[in-house]
Image (cartoon, rainbow, N blue to C red; front, side, top):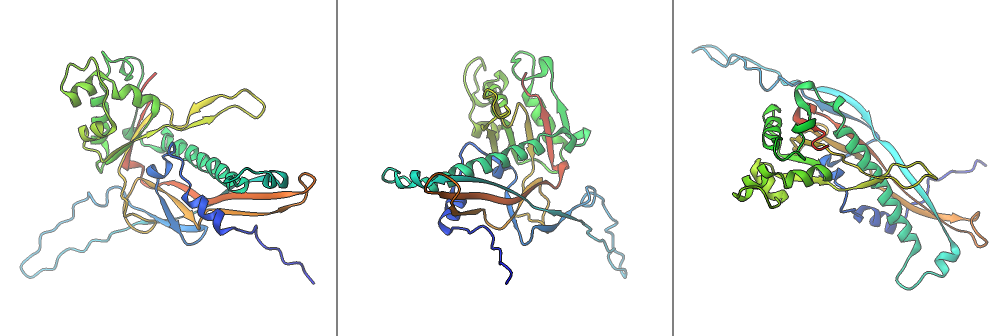
Length: 311
């Protein structure tokens, strides 16, 4: 009789922990919000850039009929990819755990944090990749144009120029922590939001957002270790020294609405446990966590990349 192979057993309690767990330092889901899809392979729509800006003849004769137009969208196919990690908790750790401490739940949270960090890195890489933008939707700063040069640079001109270049006005911006630190204390920004000489002071995210009529300034604070296994730790910022302004439509999904991008997600995060007899004298519990997602920039003309904001 053939042996039936079951998938890794999921645990509703661990799934609930995975869904609820949020790392406050990570912002990927704020930049590319998650949209559920019904299958791993899914279809999504891309809209021609000029469709809503090409003016047809709208004049109607006294006995005529209005001209007919067609709204077209290009259907594309993509698929989510699986990302997951395992951890093995020895039975001795479970038996000797202090009160109010569950090693299996702790392992689930730790695995989830690494899964989310990987998602953060993939998102930041895609959003900050200059190859994902047309030449008219990106600029690279250098020398005295970088915002750490308070006397010569002009972040107000740089940001307003980016806003004006997009065919739909950006309503959000994401910026790396290093660039944000210099932007919020730049004399031009401080003077604009505080009405002082600009030589001292700090601007808040809300003040800068209001200055440029944006809904939100998102600051990428996360760190990632760039060193290979066995090498000394080399922590670097996930979001680098760049800024991206973009238009986000929270009502958009794979079949409706123009938006800069999103993360397609198939199903809930996977979280479960099963016995592992190969670890330690008493065996242990293998814990698994993962998800099936795909980060997509679906309308790169709705975003603008300012590279190397600071040196």
